[in-house]
Image 1 (cartoon, rainbow, N blue to C red):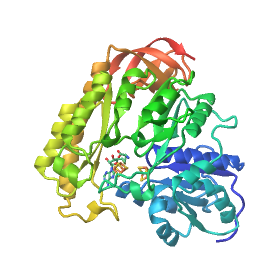
Image 2: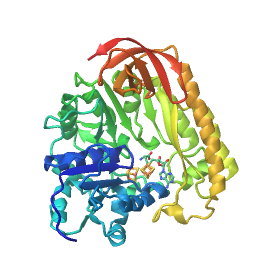
Image 3: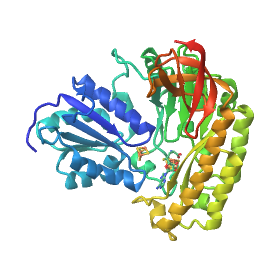
Image 4: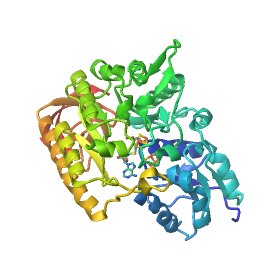
Length: 448
Ligand code: SAH
Ligand code: SF4
Ligand code: F3S
């Protein structure tokens, strides 16, 4: 490649899960620290970071079409870095197939992006997909140490990687083995987030309930211990966490849902299927029944808990009767929200070569039936919320003048009109329930 001018503007485009979004924010900070400015809205940047996701087929294909499309107003290509999980899984291929790409950087190596960029400007192409993740966190500069402001709701990655090896999933390969970030580093980062204006922190990990660390007294603590410590931060109003695996939910975490007021009444606990045969083939290490009993215990600790889950339809060998067991599980739980996907064979995973791959039409039809039920339950949950009074954390302006949008404790989108500002906690009465959001009536400001 030819040497190019140093980029003046950047854009980071994140396509994946919340952890991918967190990584995108950290890469943006690294570039800003190098004196590069975010590109103005609607204008192509000198440097584009495609922060990719590998979880399903479509997500990976998108990368190449994006690379093809990127063009600056003068018709030249920007500097392109491919980051994220596709970079990790297919780094060499990307370099071979897409000459316009000058940097490929994996999710555990992006702390070295600034040095890679210097080399790219000098005309050198480079790939860095080293693991493991702990080196990255130790090397990243402190977050929000400058005068930057945080959004009212901020992400904080506390755990990375996954040792569960569900047979359909690429994450253990793209993110590597489970590691927990140290307690003190997390408390420090949370302090800085709150100092920069965050009112809510969502603790992130591929398997967040497996987090473990040593507190300031040298005691071994789990996720619940970390949540209790964060609840002591005076200006932090809300704590959430995602995503958990049913196998790692301990008694202390269940108890924390009943005891820690700042821990929001919401639990995202993926189940994937309601059939024990399918769950075993997925290597999920829980049954439909053990999942339901676990939810009972959470609900006993926090009766108003809103539940969310992930589902896969059409896993290899899934029969109609097995799919119907998933529908029965949905009926038994009554989810407030859920995410459902067609099974997507991922290269290198055991399920990709299993017998009984389910035809696309069957998957389409099952997904439709499942989503009809999930939508029904989401609507019912929202309708049951009407008449309640709750706090809403204001995240942005609505479409109409004087209108605001925020989140209820149960993670519902709530809009209301009146005197408010982004970052306020507002007391509202929920008056109007729609399928995807609720309308509220402003009662007063809880805090500014
Ligand atoms: N660590 C989390 C999130 C994993 S990815 C967890 O275990 O819950 C998020 C969701 O994507 C998964 O819960 C699963 O429902 C879905 N998913 C993962 N791999 C998939 C695949 N190969 N095909 C379709 N959906 C998949
Ligand atoms: Fe993937 Fe399973 Fe790990 Fe979740 S628990 S990241 S679905 S392997
Ligand atoms: Fe996608 Fe990687 Fe997250 S594959 S879902 S960006 S961990």
